[in-house]
Amino acid sequence: MASSVLGSTAGEPVVDIADVMQKMAEHKGCGTSSEGGKASCGSSAGPADMPPEIWEKVKNHPCYSEEAHHHYARMHVAVAPACNIQCNYCNRKYDCANESRPGVVSERLSPEQAARKVLAVASTIPQMTVLGIAGPGDPLANPRKTFETFRLISEVAPDIKLCLSTNGLALPDWVDEIAKYKVDHVTITINMVDPEVGQHIYPWVFWNHQRVEGIEASRILMERQLKGLEMLTERGILAKINSVMIPGVNDMHLVEVNKAVKARGAFLHNIMPLISAPEHGTVFGLNGQRGPSAQELKALQDACEGDMNMMRHCRQCRADAVGLLGEDRSAEFTTDKIMAMDVQYDAEGRKAYQEAVEAERQAKVAAKADEIAGLDAVGEISVLVAVATKGHGVINEHFGHAKEFQVYELSAKGAKFVGHRRVDLYCQGGFGEEDALDTITRAINDCHAVFVAKIGGCPRADLEKAGIEPVDRFAHEYIEASAIAWFKDYLANVASGAIVHVERGDAAIRQGAYSGGALLAG
Amino acid sequence: MPYKIVAGQCTNCSACEAECPNEAISEQGTTFVIDPAKCTECIGHYDTPQCVAICPVDHTCVIDTALPRYQGAPA
Ligand code: SF4
Ligand code: SF4
Ligand code: SF4
Image (tube, rainbow over all chains, first blue to last red; front, side, top):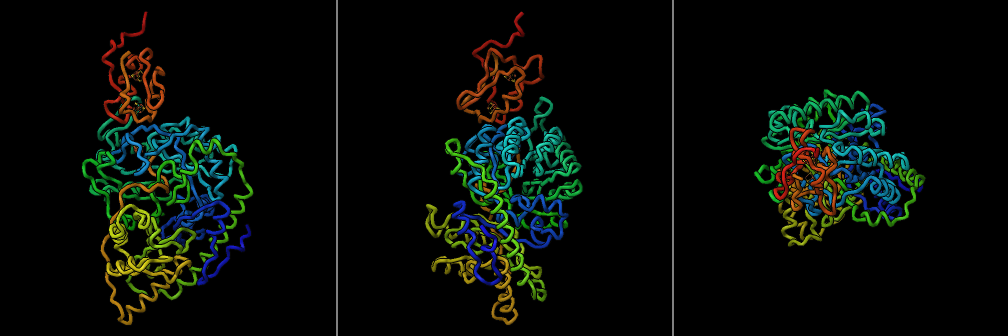
């Protein structure tokens, strides 16, 4: 595929790369995109404000680079079911494919099956550049299976990046092994740096052949996590920190966590909302511990941002997810299917695709630079807008088909990606239309407008009634350039008195993990 | 002899398998089971039975009361 196919300038409808890829990989595309300075989601930072060697490591990594996560895919294989600690937000007793909460997978693989699956997927989906092992337990509580999987894959497909996600308890023991397999991305879930806080999150850890409970458990865990992080940093292995925001337990404390991990060289800090409902059977689910609202989550992320990269595009995916963040194609790659597949590893095709993506990314950056000029006069006003997209940084999803909305903050600084909101399927869900629409309205209630490729008459009227402007005039155009163009109109209308600027309320975070996305706890 | 796994509660997580000092635990179909002939209640190895300590579901690795307690290695 020639990269010229993808060229496009601001304002013109974008060449539908999704279409091209559809033929190439039967790939549906997903969506988040926004790049720009560190003021944006941090990891969306481009080469300008990041050391070149780090940019090289993250630019194709969907979990780390908010820009890349639009174009590249990752997959997880579930080879590591055992865990060495207990978290109050995890219950590994039930395996439920519907709710796909963190720590749950439907299929366990041997290292050999996992390697085969990875090659099958990489040959079918050229943008698959990252393989992660993230559970369903802790990869480092299953070291033999984890490293055997890495070994098998690195022999056949050395271009695939390897990463793993751990609770950190066993990390210091395995850092050298991690370095040996050139695993250059490690995620540690750190929810506290104070055992007083930790005792309300971790009932026990398994340490030195004993179950250690109470405050001592968290003291051990915290020391091991921070030591592991320091050891990774010493060896130049990128470390991302995940934290689960648990209101009333560690929410304020996460600012301290942010400082502690920053000081030890963590490259990215991802704060995720607690997922908690009684039917999950977790301690937090059963004792009524609530998760944060969208506004609470954003406020904390903002407080932690500073000069640290914050990751806002995490979707708390399942451990066996396959695909771009926000979509899950695992059903196409069940063990039976991959064992029957004739797998040919197509290194050439993969390279061609990845070159095409580079060109597309450049075009997008150029489009945004044009629009941002002239925004300096904005003043204090900032608004949120929601975007329906299937991927590639373009507004290309029908309102009724959107499974999630990307949320951008518009201000004098331009358009900044600040998160995504999951919604029930409005067209296909088994609910009445009114309920589904209500769900969407609640999920994006803090937004002034919603950008879509298309929208029907009824939802349009209802959205307007809820004070959210449906915008379809930028169908198939770049998200950020369009959002900024709309924002300029909005500001002009406010200035002329045609409309009055009002703040909007909070929004609800939907409970239940998304079945596709970045890494959660080990 | 003494410990057994309550099949209905086992999550199949395999954590106990790696911790048993006697390789008494293995996967059998949809659950993990303890070979009573190999289990020593961890006596002589650890202070606490390892399977009990690591199992994420309480009361899943339990004493099998149908069998006599471990009596130490046969002479
Ligand atoms: S570390 Fe992961 S698998 Fe282990 S208990 Fe916590 S969330 Fe569950
Ligand atoms: S009690 Fe000890 S010896 Fe017996 S099965 Fe459990 S871990 Fe193995
Ligand atoms: S640790 Fe418990 S849940 Fe896991 S396999 Fe062993 S008995 Fe089953």
